[in-house]
Length: 507
Image 1 (cartoon, rainbow, N blue to C red):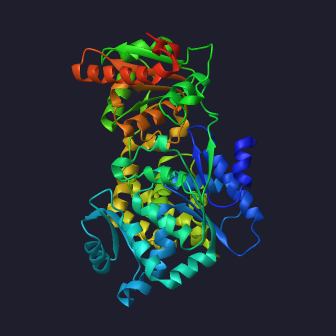
Image 2: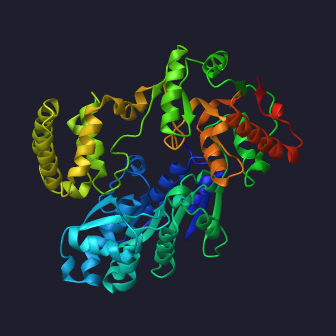
Image 3: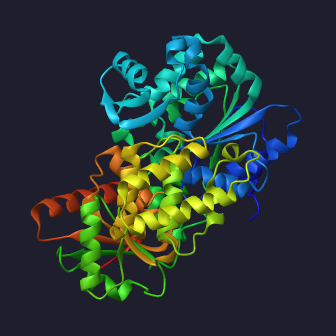
């Protein structure tokens, strides 16, 4: 894949930068290309940090870079501040009484910063706030950076640039922290994201921060609008959802990519059959996990292939040890996942000069026997020993979640997405994925709500060649939502002089 003119300009430009990247525009490819270019241009001892919201995204960046990243930090937001700030410098601010190994347990909830520090002191555990609009991890990191000169000098001497992915999902505390790094420590920032894909406001995301940086004179503002994923008709549909991109609407002749079907709640799988190409992959996207499971069952009853993709017990583990649980789950669930694949997941700093293959192989073989015999207590012991060997502390609670994930076959499909052609999942789980065909439900979106517009945008932009929209009739609540959906679409089309049948085939 070659860089477009817009991508080339982003890669070669210097200084602080914020990039508005619409869905399907090659956001990750652009960021990776810029990292590679700037590392090549860097002739100092300083390194970079590439920060993401998920371990999966961090791994993708590492794999795409195809260069030695040992000295650089590539990982999640939380792991960055925990490993680079909290662990090494907490004693510098709070005293030697914090001379212990810090772990995380975000299931433990706190109301105040003071109570969080008390639990940290007594139990050596970093918790999270009950209020999703507050962020204890970043509050603590921010406090340490403010109070510790040693910490500030360390960050300034180590990093010349921080790259932050999916910035629209940052909360206020994270945003303030990163702005401090830029404004007070002089570390350049490269920020990329799409406010139209901000679907995590329920957990504290603050997309207004992204929009605020767009007006910051210290940042260059670049845009990526060329959608390489979806066909033009689907591009048109997604573009009308946003004031930012509605101007990109383009006239087309072939209008068979979007099908709008009115249906009774139990009839929709039959009605979509004539329009669904079973030789291509497809995804049914729903609002909740319960709906996703029910919709998969309805598809199967109509003799349509469909696999429900659930959230797993380990999905919510966001500690620095999460990669280990995910790697172990893959090893024991996936037939083709070998000890070599497992070792590829191990962070470089955990390997060092150790000759670890034999140890890892023996430990995995032992765990295999223990899992087959369901010896939970010994599994906990052995996973902890494996974690200790790799310099990661494992929690009993998290290991039990891992065991449940491995032993309960209902969760296995979540690790086999590459093998499954037709799936049913939540729209939140679909973020970052793409399918030839996507089926969605109009009643899932209250388009009077900004976050629901973003949800809708994310859902429709997963589709490459076909989008099927189901509008339920016969159920009063769903019908009212459907009417509201239609009104929103009409209101968006009117200024363009268009009607719904100009952008979709109405059945």
